Image 1 (spheres, one colour):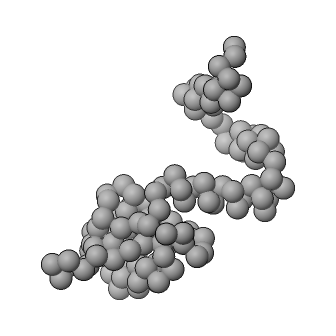
Image 2 (tube, rainbow, N blue to C red):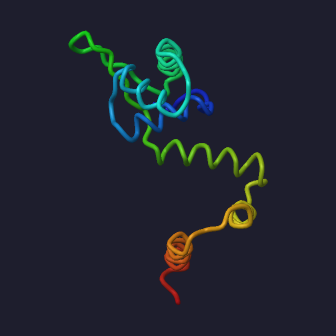
Image 3 (cartoon, rainbow, N blue to C red):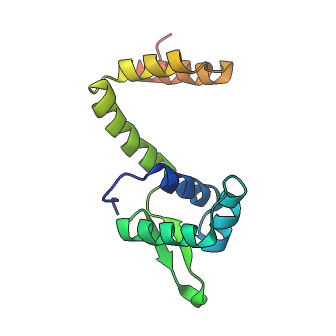
Length: 127
C-alpha cells in the first residue's frame, strides 16, 4: 500500500519506533517516545489513528489489543522521501545532493568506505 502523504517529523519518529521494534501497541510506542520527548499517551494514540487513516500504518485488533505496524519498510519510505527531496531541492541532480550531504556533515571513514564501494559497484567493479 502506497501512503497518500509524506510522513511529518512526528510521524517519522513513530515510524522509526515501529521499524526498530516491529508491530507495537500504543503503550509500547509511547514508552519509547516519552523517554526522548515529553508527550502524552493520548497524543501518541491520536497520531497513530491519523497515520492509520493516511495509510502510513495498519492496525491489528486481534485479541482486543490494538497493535500497529508500518505499511512500508524503512528503505521504501527513505526512497520516497529522498526522491521527493532530490526533485524539489536539487532539481533531480544526484551529484548535487551527494556533494551537499558530504559538505554539510563530515562522513566517518566507514561511511566513506561504504560510499566508495557503492561507487565501484555502480561503475561495474572497475578500480
